[in-house]
Length: 342
Image (cartoon, rainbow, N blue to C red; front, side):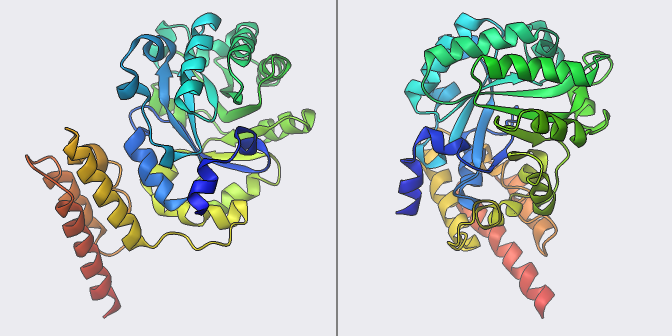
């Protein structure tokens, strides 16, 4: 019953208080990943991968934009720089049932730059504001932006102030800030996640300057305790690879962040759910590996984790693979834990 109540909650409730989110990650946060993460947390805001506006408008919508109501609350992240196209794509996302539309102003990849969107839009804050305004006119659900603190040689004080001022004036419901610069030339997307130094204080200052606006922080956050620390300074916290590589850290998000006293799901229940889900996906023509590739890190650091990873990594790609492989891998974890306790 509680899950159904969550699914039917209003759009405005996303930003009615503190927010914990799992970041949009290209090639990672697909519908199978989100289904897994939702088993660990009822309340965390989940995001799609970045979807280019043209793909949302002209592509196979079920394949590109499809999701289950069980994933809610889930937001659609769009990439683009044409206000009209973004408005059209946002309208499609709203019609499909997404709870939020987010504009990517943070991805530094060459492919994204060639399309004149992502982090390079930090250089054109007026255009970003125009994009937000167009989307706000197109939809009734929240429209938000995810950005960097600046790019290349920009002054991070001026760059972030200009971006934030423009999008908030245009009606953005939230601004999520990855607390690093992005270097558009000379660093790969992976290096841009690690090499530019983190500057959390810059995001804190932005919040101090905009006390009535929702400001969320992202970048380098590894633990629940770190997340709670940031929430003393900003309104929301977003984790990416830390949550993906060890989804067990999501188990206490509901209690620690949202004050939900309901017990988190038992591990056996999560395994059962993912087995049922995987077999359903296979019955529709999918492969087990589409699901299990997101589950490999589940037992990070636990006895039996190595065998769990081996089974999922090798056997899930075999012809006719089904959920029995997930159950066999979980038995290996249970055996490892039993041997450790003996």
